[in-house]
Length: 170
Image (cartoon, rainbow, N blue to C red; front, side):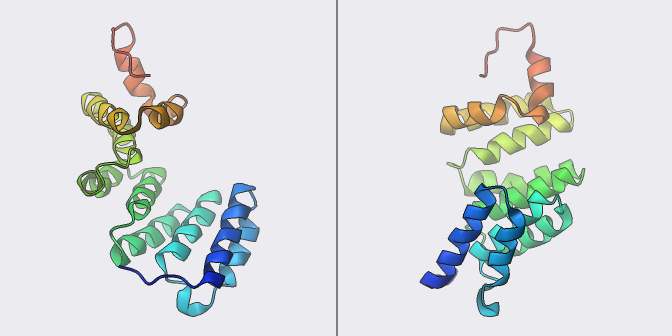
C-alpha cells in the first residue's frame, strides 16, 4: 500500500492531468518537476510521468517507470498495462503479453487488460487466442471495448480472420 498524497501534491497531479488532456505534455512535465523530491517516486506521480513520456514516444522510459510502479505497488493495474504497452511499442510484443498475462487474473474487472492481450495475440499470429481474450474483454465492459477496438489496427488480424463468418464481435 502506498502513502496517501498531501493535498498540494494532488493539485499538482490534477494540473498535470489537465495539461495532458489539453495535449500539452511539456506543461504537464513542468508540473511534475515541481513535485517535491520526497513524492516523485509515488506511484501516482510516476504514472503521470509515464503518460508524459508516452506522448513523446519514449517507450524505454515508459517501460522502466511502469516497471517501478508494479514493483512499488502491484495493486495499480495501470503499471502493468503501461509496462506491456511500452514493450509492445518497442516491438517486444511477446514480452508484452507475458508481462501482462498475470494481471488478467489479478484484475478480472479491468477490461483493457484482456483487450490488450487480444491485441498482442493478434500481433503475434495467435488469432484464436485473441478471440478468446477479446470476448473476455467484452464480457467485462462491452461499450468501452467497442469504442476502443473499432479502430485499433492491432486487432485487424482478428477481424480479417473472421471476415466471411457469422462471428460479430462489434
